[in-house]
Length: 158
Image (cartoon, rainbow, N blue to C red; front, side, top):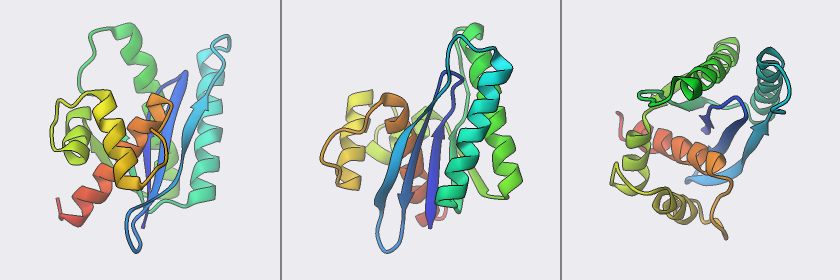
């Protein structure tokens, strides 16, 4: 099974791809970046194009996306919500199965502690996937954590 984790954002969307056969292994991680000087509609179009390329290349069986649950700043929440909408639209077009996780749920699945620090999550992602270095940038590391969470919770039947 191929699992694609997505940490949505307008400026930077992180992605992480893992495979679960025969064991959990790393396939790819990175970011889709959009120019800050472009209008929002153009940035969202670039995000859609990047996502379509990922779906075409990796053909995921499961998509794991960060659930937006709390934002202190509406100025941040709106663009992230718009980016998540693009992610969900591309997912709908490909008919991929979808799981959403809050950051707390992803941290819990990866580290066993829902309030783990970012560096703790990155170290566990590195260890679980046998990476030689910490996954970077943060958005891609978060996306890998989401994909791992999808694997853990799918195997446990939750």
